[in-house]
Image 1 (cartoon, one colour):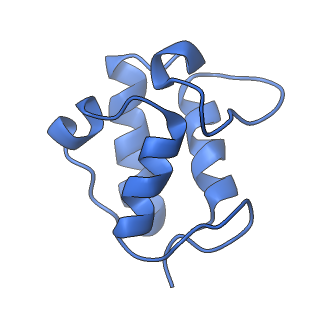
Image 2 (tube, helix red, strand yellow; image 1 turned 135 degrees about the vertical axis):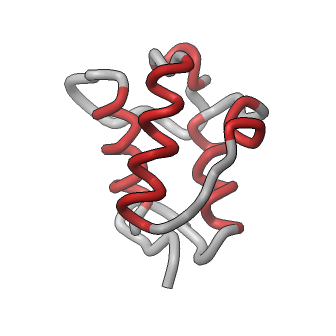
Amino acid sequence: MTETMVLEIIREAVDGEGGYPGREELLQDVGVDSIAGYEIRLLIRERCGAQVSEEEFDGLRSVGDLLDLLRCRGGAPAGRGTALDA
């Protein structure tokens, strides 16, 4: 899974249009509420097999926090288009 795929998941969950959210944007400001958060966690599990618990997700503040958490789970996204997991 790439960073771009994660950003697409976020955009899909919040019914966003246009560009991808930036790493520094707060999840709340992007439109992530509890329902979108659940959908994001579900899509991440389905598309890359990574588990993000509700407690972990609730502790995240920004898009970058989510990307960093997933990087720790298996791979390192240095930028868009790089693998989150090998």
